Length: 232
Length: 217
Image 1 (tube, one colour):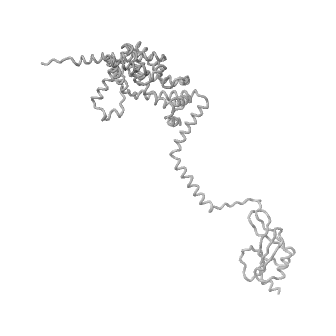
Image 2 (tube, each protein chain N blue to C red; image 1 turned 135 degrees about the horizontal axis):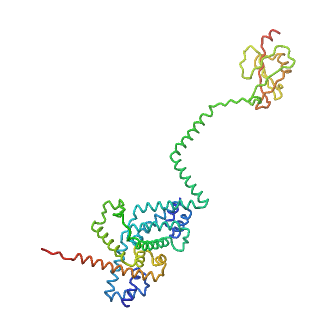
C-alpha cells in the first residue's frame, strides 16, 4: 500500500470502519512507514483532544429565552388545536388548580366531616321529633273508649290498663276486639257483681287503633264499691 | 403525567422515545416541550457554538432551531431519528447565519463589551480533581482548537464537529448533511487533515514566539 492510499484510509481507520483485509494492509504499511505512523498518531491525538473538549455550558439567558419560546409555542398550538385537545388542556389546568386549592384544606375538611358525623350520630337518639298532622288518623296505639248502650245507672269510670286505682273499688279488666266488642274479661279487684255482668253484656266500644287500623286492646272499668254496698 | 411516561420509557428504544415525544408535542403536551428542551438544548448549543464560534450568533441560531422544531414538528415524518432531524436544522441554520453575518456583521457595533458567562455553582467552588494549571492548559487547548476550527472550510468543519464533538455515526452525518456516505468520509478526512495543519501551524507560531531568546545583560 502506498502512502497516498494510506492517507485515504487513515480517517476511517481511526474510526474503526475499515474491513479486516484493509485494516491488515494499513497495519502492514504502518510498520514500514514512519511518516505515516507519525501522521496517524497526530491525527489520533487531535481526535482525542476534540472529544475531550469541554462542553460549553448553555448561557442561562438563552435557557430562559428557550423556555419562554416553548411556552409561547405551546400556547399557540393549544389555541389552534381541535376542541378535544383544547378541552383536555382546560381539564388538565382546572384539575391542577383544583388540586392546588384542595390540598391545603383536604385534611381539615375530612376531619370536620368525620367529627360532624360522629357528633350527629351521638345526638340523634336524644332528639325527639313531634309531628302532629291535623285530620290524619292517629298512628300510635290508643286505648279503646267505651259507651254503654241502654245503661240507666251511674256510668262506671274507664281507665287505661296501667292506671292506679284506689283499693276500695271493683275493677274489671276487659279485652276488646277490633270491632269494639268485649272478647274477654277478668276481675282485677273486688268481686264480680250483676252490675258488672250487665255492663259486660251490653256495652260497646270504639276499638283501639294501631297505625290507623282497629285492633285488639284492653281497658279497665272501675265500679265504685260504695254504690254496690248501698244497693245491697 | 407525560413526564412519568417518558421516565418509564427511559430504558426503552430511542425510536420509541422519539415517537412518544413527537406525539406529545403534536398534542400540545406541556411536559413534552420541556422534555425536548432538556434533551436537546445543550447539544444543539454546543454544535451551534462550534460551527459559528460566536456566542451571540450561536444563541440566535439555537433559538431559531427550536422555533423551527416547534413549528414544523407536524412535518416530521420519522424517517430519520429526531436527533438527526434537529441536527440537520441546526447545521442549516448555522449555515444561513454564517452567510447572513458575513454580509452584515461588518456594519454592526457590539454594545455588549463582555460576553455573558454563565457560571454554575459547581464552577465556583474548588475542584479538587484538577489543578489550576491543568484547567488553564485545558482552557488554552480549547481556545487553540476553537480558533483552528474557525479557520478551516465550513463544509469540513461541519463534518468534523458532527463526528468528533457530537459523536454521530457516519450514516447519521450523511443524513444530517444530506450527502452520500462517501462524501462524509472524504469531508471528515479532509477536515481532520486541515485541522491538524492549522494546529501545527498555530503551535509552531506559538513555540516560535516562546522561543525568542531574551538577552541577558
